[in-house]
Length: 108
Image 1 (tube, rainbow, N blue to C red):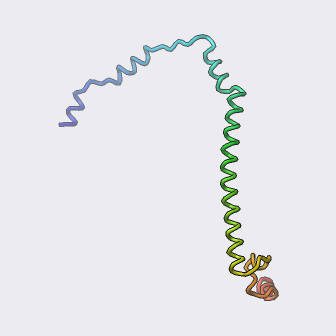
Image 2: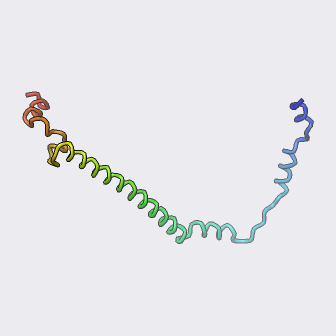
Image 3: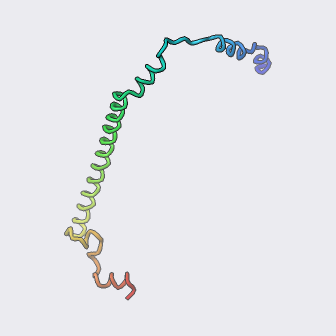
């Protein structure tokens, strides 16, 4: 029943295409040049560049501040666990001997 009701409706796609063909858009002389000049003017490009720079700086500072906070937390945890901030403790070498680690790495 639903399918048969759809078949009885007149086809409007032909009318729409005829209507589109009959429409003509008349613009004043120089309209296209004015539009492209507005789009690609130096002011618009400069404004877009400024917006990009501002967005990029904001994203950079958010990432940089997060990284600094992560480094500070890591250093605090190393200091609390090892008791110092030496180079060996940052590498996780404070529990072993340097000579034995070098021997393990070189195979000697």
